[in-house]
Image 1: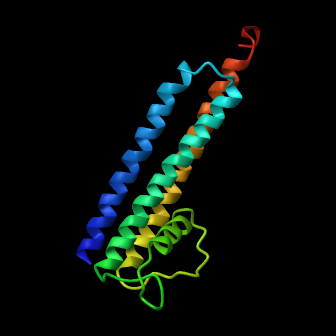
Image 2 (image 1 turned 60 degrees about the vertical axis):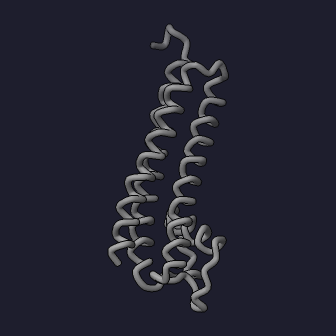
Image 3 (image 1 turned 120 degrees about the vertical axis):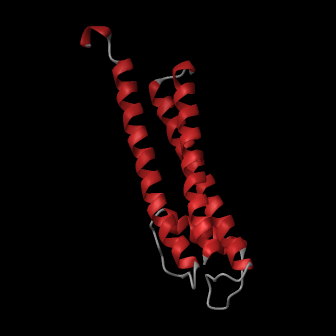
Length: 146
């Protein structure tokens, strides 16, 4: 159980750092891009998607490793599969939760933390996209409107 708690704390830190780095690099890149504002929003959304995909992969990899260490399972059979770990991570991170895979044992703690972490990081992305779009709209207006 202690290893799962350590994994949760580590993942919270890593996913926050990944998200911060991706968004800060995009924020630095956007002013230098010589493309229309609409296209810049696509860059923002793609970067957010990539950040979330990396974060989901980190959780999936950790779920897979913890199952291999016999610290729980996601399936009734107890078989450990990378694909199932990644799928469960994606549905948990996004709070979709189909329920076809259910964590057993200490992995339940990781699943709960991932759902909360995903909610916070997705909110962060939405907030950043809104602020970026607001900036793009301001830049796109003629100077007489300002």
